[in-house]
Length: 395
Image: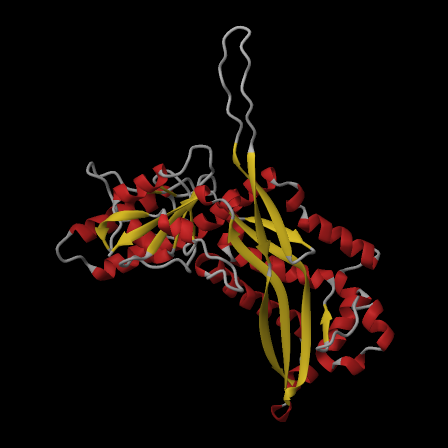
């Protein structure tokens, strides 16, 4: 397949892949070649799915999806229309990263970096840098792209969830109707501290020809993304996010596969039927599971995986879009290999505003290494269990 992959190419590739696996001795080299071509197409498909989900979120939560516009307005108000890297705040942060406390006057520590030197010698970075890291995470983590994201200035957010509606009754003429109320429950979501430490040599800080503060923020963003991505899927919920694959209620209610350590065509179809009508669901699994599902067909030879239209409609599994989350378990005994649900309603991610950075010149002073430790506060939690269903493979 060429770079300009067409739907016909994809369909043909899937047919050839299935044909090879149906042989008693498949051509493994050809199988690998086809898989690589399909993977190349999959990158475009996942970008399309992310774009589609982002558009849905913008339509349903317009106010919460204006971050980029608010940042731009903040830049202009802070810098009088200048680029944020030209502002005094950013320049002060760059000086702090490269030369430490002594490079900044005591008055600038408050006026420019917006906060005092805290008890551990740290500074809260300016809002623009906080947004840069959040943006990096949004681009990397697929769970953040499909879940509901809330931002708050407090550590704990109380969410009210309606769990029943009033009951409507029928009455005869002149008869009195009954009374009924909706019922609600409260779910507390608490943010936990996530930490990344980036060591940099003094030589690099003193002689760097590029923006070290941007490099440190980029590295920290990738570290935060890797940690939160795993937490949203498999986190224990103890001083960390609660992974939806380990939520006790979801696991207890999980559908068990028909076969041992295997997924069948019917398993995927039955899983979709476990969700109430009205939700806007997606499948979630890892890349290895996707390769497994591509080969499944029903008794009439109809494939479970169907290619979409390039740039218009996403590829589907059983008619639903899917998201690749490589923190999901592989196909194996007792594994939760597939999730299916409306994560925007069922899973919430809480970001506490504020990002702290600590510059440590002491711990590795003999090696002339400076450590930059960044702290942020966030969590993820299942808030509506009926909106997410899991598939657990039989032992």
